[in-house]
Length: 228
Image (cartoon, helix red, strand yellow):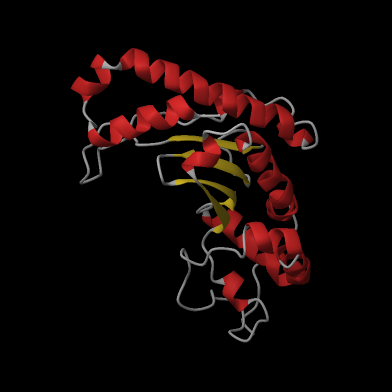
């Protein structure tokens, strides 16, 4: 349950300034602690069956609320959300994982790999080229379809990357620059006792998808495909 977190973030959205934040620091600390405790419960539960997360500390998963405004036109000093990323090595790792984003009316869970580096992106594309049928089976399972529908195509090339045929059966996946699935979370759910159970269900469903991506990243037999 995250009622205090949602309440604080709703106020922050309307008062995103250092002056307001400092005047309400105790409010922030209470809300942040609520979110950390909730995220800790998520981590403890998923680490029971995902052994790559077994020794992960919650401090390695939680994102800072302070924004880096150096290269942004938006100079708001704080993010209007709380977020945590559960992946092998924590939030700064190269591995696919599970993300929880809490913001009033804009909360969601997501799973996968967001904007990987070129080497990692090439490895995932290679895995899709070799084993796209397996990814298809994962994403066509009934529970996956009901919860996530499909891999988002927002972050995508206009054409198939060099080295792959435009007639490739998984051409649309090969165009992707991120491999992510999402599901929205409404405020009523997050304020209810059912929030944790629902989010853990989302992770369970996404685990084969995450595993597919991480197996690709750990593949040492990388090659540069020929143009076909």
